[in-house]
Length: 484
Image (cartoon, rainbow, N blue to C red; front, side):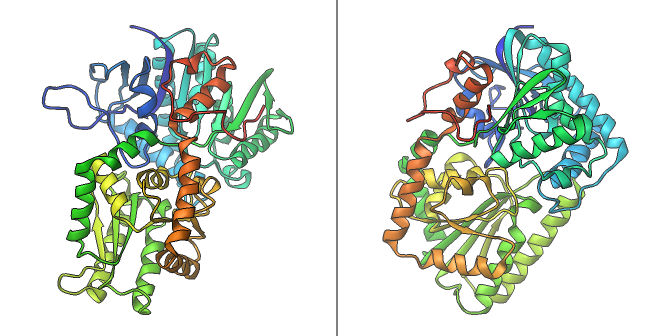
């Protein structure tokens, strides 16, 4: 088994579910997904990615993707149900998103979660070079840092949580809370999207583990010091800008607008089909704007892309049925022949198609009830080279801390959401240009390479691990909020 100085550990390998015609593996991308975030970093950086291949059964033998080696981890059908669909996505996911949906505490799921986390840790321990670095990603693998500390104390261990971390009073509901906190704190550096998450973990470490914590949320536990920090994740800005500039993409955007009937205004939302994304609240607000006559179907169109997600989980199937029923009702009530109120697309889109959609939209509506970051908001800003367009953004998305010039809104307040949508639709073009230019300026210096360099430099303190990363357009500094 070949070893790497940098090993990424994530639930899924970054593979498309369908092989290319020649049998080669292709990078798996999705709106705002982890693979999209890490694509720019690892496509030219020698590393190994440990993860599940997406199908139950024995781990397949997979070729490399460029300089990236793949180390698949096997999952059985019962393990998939208990570890992924159960504990990760029916217990942790809703709890970490402020219990938007009631978390389910099933004692049987914990054993699967624990056992699968150990398998991931053992796989990573096999492929990392002595003195190398292992970067564990997200809530699916929260026990892995602690397990790696036992297996490979000679390596640097990083953990990054892409989703929010809840307030202590919510986290304390978890039956296995001590094991989860201790597992996370097996890392040398624990990274979050927002500083408040680091503070929440520090409070829990004191309460559950008797740890000592400094004013900067540096945690001393079991004789070790664990650093925490906020490192807001970003996108490959250069890639999205290049896509948006392609003649075929620009032509596609023009054709999309023609296909929509050349309305005066196009509103767009692109989400995974998930109850945290606020899709139903958004539909309610738009429905009431149509009902009150403040928006007319003849001159305004809403496009809702809902990428299929976790279709085997019951709550997601129920959500899909509710949303499809509501879209049908709204179209039946307000639509006309040749004039649809809402175009609803429950399907994945490739990167070029997304870039075309972003350029078609006059108003991008990103209103999750809770989100760690939301990279769709950043993709939209990157795609608007002419500094036009309006971004309506939830206060409860991590991106709101960076995009203060967006039209910020509380998505739980339907009346406020309605007024904000109207404000964005009717804004002066000069004001929109000012807002968009400010957001684009921030994004250009806070791209995905800057994020990875900041985190990995903080992990080893020397920049050695980050030295192999490609250069960002204007990467500089380390992410705000680093806790030392």
